[in-house]
Every structure is written in structure tokens, then in C-alpha cells.
Length: 584
Ligand code: G6P
Image 1: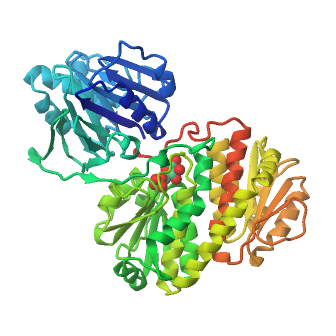
Image 2: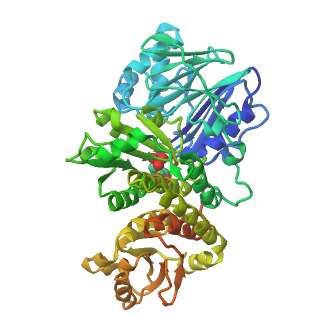
């Protein structure tokens, strides 16, 4: 949530700053702003900001911010950066300062005026207040940080030292990028790899300052030396590569993602996963998996399959509700599933687990906070995912969980062969997009749509329903077929669209539930893995029931995509969402 960038260079940085801001936009996109010798900010997107930038605006040091509103409505005033009341500091912030009202009251007494409703402006004015007293920006930063409660990634320019950027990080992502002529701070590596491939990963409570030549990092009043890491990233990943949207491109990458997983984790028909990790899972009484959103849905599928083939109990927790759960087996291993590796709910859950030795992260970003915190991190191998709605990373998450299940029972070869089958099946789906488009035209005008399924099909539908909501804004819900009659059938009326999913003979009883809604004049379309000889049916072949989530999900992802396209939605950046949720 919110993307921040601050570059200090020997040359003008306008174009790099704006390019980076465009790449950061997926983190939050309700308003945007820059400081480059002048402050320019606006409600809307980077493309709106660009219209306000003329040739007079340029500098060798500046800040940029893309916002996902928390405190204060979406408008120009609440957009970042902020300039302090006495014009001493410019600041961008990602995170939430929980005690900002208290600080604000004290500053009001001292005569400070506030123009926005944000917690961030309060931080900017607190810096200003200390600076007027001590005339020392670094000291002012340290004193300010001592007063802050909550989370922050801060980028700050003291207007008396216009080539220096001060920074601080706690519970919100921030890294430093290094190059020969410039240095910078940024919320995530992917958005700025076009600038450099050398980065320093900051840990919580680290702060400091940088200019174009030097970087100084401090922890608890002491300067610390940190090594940089050099990454080898694929340039092609951040373009749409000829596709109209990142979401469509990313769905098309799913066969490649499965191939990446086989390349990374298998050798000579064996799954090569850390043997200690697998042993720990085998010896554990239970396994815990935590996730949010799409990752939570992947965890539910993982539970189903791990339990089925290993007979090991798996508990799945929504990370955002973890603190409200009563009975948790803290002695058993925890798997944190997170595409971004930055989701705040998972970080909070991490802090609440005392024994950190058994925490493992499955993530797409090995430099992320949750990857750093974990005992060991496993790569989802999806490649950078840009579209806010997760598609290929979901496929990776499900696949990795199935892979550990097969490894636990030493059936490596079955897993490997089935993944090759999945690759073929997904390719088939990608080649029959016309029928999915046709189904989208039938359902695109729904005001409400219901997915019906039984057993694991219901779990697959939870994600199908979320995807449809996220990108097409069609209200939808997933119901267990057998539960309909216990209440939800009251929602069925003439013309309501229902999608049934049957991927297993065991779930054929869903056909009676379909009859029930048809009798109430609902329009039913059925997706199944074998031909059931009924009207409005779409068949996706699949021979191994345990792999159906991987095989059928791309169909539904494309369906959501086409509904969104037909409804003219902002597919890669749906309203109100953000790719990486770093605030509670
Ligand atoms: C946000 C995204 C979702 C994602 C969820 C969890 O809400 O919009 O697409 O599923 O966060 O993200 P994570 O990075 O932890 O998997």
C-alpha cells in the first residue's frame, strides 16, 4: 500500500523518478505526487500527474509517492509529498502512525497548522518542530522516530540540504538502490530494477541518509555496515509483452510457471526440497498455513490435498484473524503463503508466534520482509506479478503445496508427471479462449452471480468468486451446493446467473442442486471435467482429481478477465485495491 521513491543523483532525475512511480503504482493508485524542486500532486494516476509537469520541473534529487488512502479521503491535499509548516522538510510516507493525533495536538499547541487529514503530515511537522529547535536534520529525524508508534517507510528531504535524502523503516517495506552516479530509496525492488541491480535490504528500525555518493545506515544510534545484494532480473517481465493487460499476460505465463517450478525443485525425477523441512513436516502433529486473499484460498486447497494424501492434519488461518483464534498448536510448523512477502497481517502473525524456528515462507519475492524473517523461504517461481489480481502466483502456491504433499509420501514421480499433464491442459484452455469469452458475454451483466460446488470444488470456487469480484466488480459468492437449501436459495430468482463446478464423480450430487436453482428460473452454466451431457456445459479434461485446482482455475481467471474487459474495467488496477497490503 503506497509506493515511495526518492532518488539523489549527479544528474537530473525527472524521467527516472516518474518511470519508477509508474512501476510503483500497483501498490496504491488513488493519488500521486512528486517533489522535484517544486511540489506537484494530484488525485488520480501518474498519467494525470504527468499532465501537470512542465519543463521547468527537474532536479537531481526528489521524492515520489503513489497513495492508497488510509487517513483522509482521496483528494489533492491528502496526496503526498507533504511540505512542513515552516517549509523545512518534504516527506513521503507509507504505513500508519497510530499515535498521530496525540502528536498533532501537541504541535497545534505550538502553533502548527495542518492542511491534510493524514498522519503523514504530522510526521513532517514534527521533524520541522525539532529542526527549528536544534538546526540539525539528522537529530530531528532521530527524535521524531523516537516519538512514532505504528508503521512507516519514510523518505525525507531537508530543504536546507536539497541533495540528501533521509529515510527510516519500520514494518513497511523499503530498500536502498545503489549505482555509480546515484542512490535511491524505494518501496520495492521490482519497480526500480531498470535503475540498478544492486540493492541493500533494510530491516525494521533502520534509518539514515544518502546522497549520490554515500549511504549511511544506522540502528539504535550506531552506524552499521550492510552488504548489498546483486540481482539478476529478467527485463522482459515488467512489460506486457504484446498482451493488452498484465492479467492476461500472467494467465498465459502459467504453463511457464509450472515449468519453472519443475526446473527449480526437481532433478532426475526427484523433488529436491530441503530434507530438513520435509522431515519437520512429516514429524509434526499438525501443519499450519497462513495467508490472505488469494493466498488464503491457495492454502485451503493445500490443506485439502495434504490431508488427503498424507493424512496429516493441516490448519489454515486467515492471517488477519490469526490473533482471534483460540486454539493454535505453536509447536507445529507454520507455512506463510504470500505472493508479495510484505502483507502486514502475516507480519503481525509472525510477531505473535514465539518460536520462530518453524516458520517457513513461500513467496514470489525472496528479498521481501517475510522471506527475510522466515527460517527458510521458498521461491514461488512465478516471476514478477504486476496485475493486482493474483493469477499465476495462485497457481504456484497451489502447486508448491501439492508438491510438499507428494514429497512427504515419496511419490515424486507422480507429482512430476502430473505437472506435465497440467501444463498441457492449461495450454488447451488458453487455446480455447473463445468459448470462455462466449460465457463471459452471457454473465457480464449479472448484478449477482453464484458459484456452486461441493468438496474441493467449493474451495476452488472461493477463489473464482474473488477473482470475478476483484476485476469485474460483479457481486458474486461461492456456496456449497448442499447448503443452498438452508438459506442462500432465497437469493435465487429468475435470470440469476449460477455457475456450477463438478470436477469429481463424488460431487455429482451437485446436479440436484443445479436442478433446484433451475426450477427457480436461474440461468445455469456448468463447468466439469467430464462430459455430463447437459446444456451449457464447458468441459476441461482432467484425469487426476488432486490436480484439478491447477487445471480448472485458469479457465475461471480468464472468465473474470473477459467479464472485466466487457464491462470496461480497469483490469490491472481495480478500484480500491492494492497489490501489496502493508497496512492493517
Ligand atoms: C492483496 C492483493 C490480493 C492478494 C492479497 C494477499 O489484497 O490485492 O491479490 O491475494 O493481498 O497478498 P500476498 O502478497 O500476501 O499473497
